[in-house]
Amino acid sequence: MITMCVLHISLVMLFSTEISSLDCTILLFQQNKMNTESLELLSKIGGQFPLRCLKENRNFRLPQKALRPRESQEKDAKMVIQEILQQILNIFSENLTQAAWDRSSVETLQNGLHWQTEKLETCLHSEMENETPYLGNKKLLFPMLKLKKYFQRIRDFLKEKQFSLCAWETIRLEMGRCLLFVDQLIKKA
Ligand SMILES: *[C@@H]1O[C@H](CO)[C@@H](O)[C@H](O)[C@H]1NC(C)=O
Image (tube, rainbow, N blue to C red):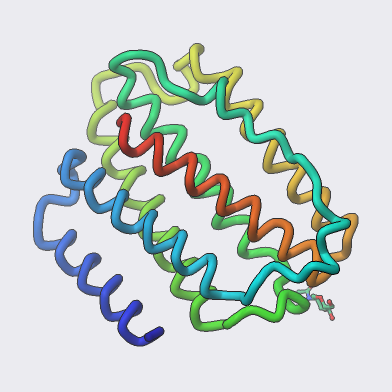
């Protein structure tokens, strides 16, 4: 099952390097596929949510409303997707010793996220060659700040709980919410 998944992701990667790496339209189709796979991996890396961890439950307040793109703001949506996936990758690069997760699935998830963020970055660079650079996009500054704060709350939580098993299970659920939101964004981008 795991081998199948790795193989599948490798095939998607192979496919994508054969076509132009700057083709943002096909990229979104691939992002959609990869995001679905990330969601599947997220449920696969661990078992059922342990009931004893319910007490750790917390509302991290993903700023969905601020991040939802206005009409015909595909590029903004891609930037937001890129930032979220990068942050999720950073979270899953923290100390996972106590998480009791399937190592190889975690690695597949990390590799997939890495691939997605790289591709998105290439696409964004190609789209923005003659336009305002990322930081010049004032409309996005406030939503991005909210997003960064959201991920800061998550990192603080993990630190406070000393990267315990329950903390990681809580964050696994939360990252699932995040990826579902990314799914909506991809469909709008
Ligand atoms: C990760 O956490 C474990 C204990 O949970 C600790 O023994 C180990 O040193 C930590 N690793 C890093 C790189 O901080």
